[in-house]
Length: 246
Image (cartoon, rainbow, N blue to C red; front, top):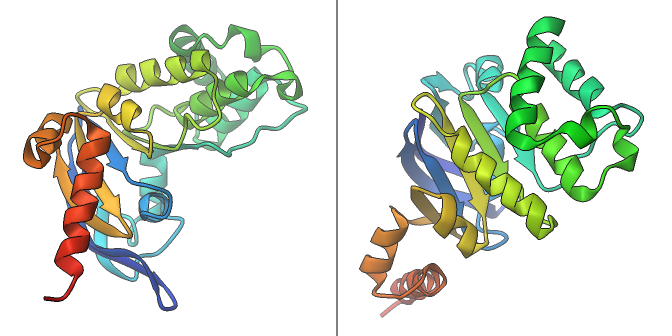
């Protein structure tokens, strides 16, 4: 579902991604783990066709992000922690509008809204203006908007940022329910507990470099650490020691 080969991205003299390669399969919640500045958002923006890589290739469901950007955009849905809504529109109007952008008819859009209402509990948002929404309500509509066209790949970039405990719980439950035999969820975060709960495999990034790709259990075994936070710091320390000249 996702194939990345030797992907790099530079901004002048700054290298945001350095020769990153990995693949992810349908049926997975695949985590991107790293601190702020690790390169997670840059990588996701390349996959979403918002940035062009400096070198290397990436494909989504067999479609190259540079050669077939329009096709890739129809296959993905994107959620991050800072996406806004049209305050004067109701939740239903927002979802119908974006469904139309993806070519859904009104009947198809309304049927899809019913499905999403059942999984995300949108009832409190559908017939109220977005200006009245709480942060959690807004994020539910943002998620519904991202998957209104039932994308094969759902990209979540720090999507739980700023959410209260109830909204965060709803998000994580939806992540687990969305993956399927023909779907992939990319879950980017720096919160270790979220990765431990929802991710099948994880790519660990630090300063634009790929440190490891493994299951959470595999990362713990290879590092000899009792939890993911300690495992992450052990990997970062080991990479730093390798970089020090003898």
